[in-house]
Image 1 (cartoon, rainbow over the protein chains, first blue to last red):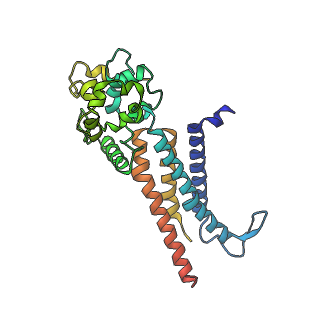
Image 2: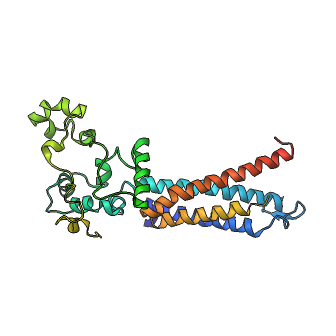
Length: 230
Length: 61
């Protein structure tokens, strides 16, 4: 019974069940033509008897409103919980260089150091990019849908580039106030620049991911960075 | 109420949604987000339009 506790599996089972139920209801609505329905023909529901016409109307309400709404809600939950996982980011091949580099123990990029030292134990992409993509704010969600549309229609060029500057607040939500952070004198001296966004952590701590040049087709590192992971 | 068109459209939307839930890749996600969801919305609106028409015909509304 352990699988019942696994939320993603439960969501999958519920979602598929709800879709199959919806299909069955719709199929019945198609099979039962308008002519075969009459007010005289009764359907026994154990607790009450209703006319076949009323029963069909109830089925239509269930199929088009209740079950459809349930399926859409479950699928949307699946979207917004799923996009927080690293494997979800990795399913778009343009993201593979970031994920391959992050999981490479020999890499010295900031993301790889956070990963290999387990400074972030799970949902590593989402933890550092909470203000981006389908799991973020409304604007971030809109950007996420735009990127999804561009990726699936192939209307993008490699290497991909972020349209905005990385938000230092994402680093600060973990680092600010920690003893290790406060003990570094330059952090105190640069606090104003870090908080108003004129300075980035990346200025001193190096690149978070492989450079644009490395992610450009034809670069010697490109094939290694693009290799299919597990 | 003849709801064949709505039922067929809903079946297509349900199949697309189920495919995305089982195989969550970017292509099925895009199909769900940009095709199945709007299709469900259209089906619901068409169905509600029929319901309101029938209620109006019977002078309930």
